[in-house]
Amino acid sequence: MSFPNSVTNHLGNVLSVLSDRKKPKSISSGIATSYDPVVISAMDYYPFGLEMEGRTADFENYRYGFQGQEKDDEIKGSGNSYDFNFRIYDPRLGRFLSTAPLSPDYPWNSPYAFSENRLIDAIELEGLEAFFIHGTTSSPNRWNDASVETLGGLTNNKTFIRKFSWEDLDGLLNNSNDRYEAAKRLVKFIKTNRVEGEEVTLIGHSHGGNVSIQAAKLYYQETGEKVNIITVATPTYESDSKNLMEDPGTKLGQEAINDHLHLYNKIDGVQGELAGEEVYDSSPKTRNTELNVNQHYRGTVKTPDPLNPGMTRRSNDRMGAHSFDVDHPETIKNTKVDKLKPVNK
Image 1 (cartoon, rainbow, N blue to C red):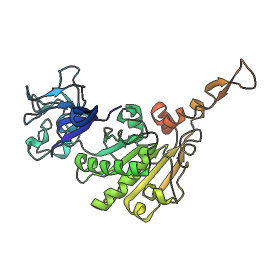
Image 2 (cartoon, rainbow, N blue to C red; image 1 turned 30 degrees about the vertical axis):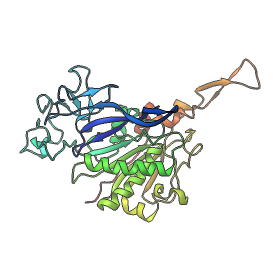
Image 3 (cartoon, rainbow, N blue to C red; image 1 turned 90 degrees about the vertical axis):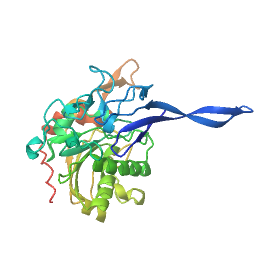
Image 4 (cartoon, one colour; image 1 turned 180 degrees about the vertical axis):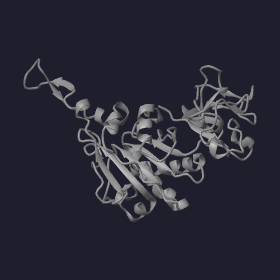
């Protein structure tokens, strides 16, 4: 497996993508003495984001490009359409195909304009963001529309960004140091993509919740702004010197976090068993909310019965229950859960 490393400019435009693989350039006595980089893609853009012909090469269908957004190449061809979450952008026209969600708040701007036509120093903002953070050995693709809609309904936000990735750090044995590096990356991602003046909400699944707690503290240290958090099936770490940054109950955590909703269930075989504990006890700002997922995961797995050859017995789907929010988001809707408190400005 290789991990791509993107090279971007001040606008987040992906200019080149390099693999972590090394290609031997010269060999002496059977030993490589120098290497060439393995280039996955390279691209250059016209001001509104159209890829320059003759200055673009993509060898492995890399998904991201102009301003770091995901390309939608299926209908219009490579680099001719970008997905900005709630709107589709055509770089050939330099315009969006639908109005901006925040257009009523900015009546002086065209609702279809891109980046206020400021192409040198400005990026297109998506507005009122809640940021979704995936967990261990996962990716941004884990979040489906039903899950985002359900969890988003517990926030005070209107737009939801699920593109943040820490896939190169989220291996099965990731630790608090890996998650700290991911948190620093998340803080940078928030600063690049948020709308000034709107509250920030972080929604993390599994160890993505630990990343969120660390990021909330780092973000507060840099900006002085409090953050709302929802953790879903997140292993909890408290009173552990190695994981103090992941404890919302510390002094810094209480300063940085405005409100914290923690969703969990008793069948989950990851949280509280393979990693961490089930609930947070140290933070008065944390609301632990247990969800009943019995009808979906209790006794739903058939396994051989070691005491009765040829027979099977039913056991709980403990791994499946770890992803209840995407498989059965109705379990959240069916539970009385109060929304996050608005962040006091």
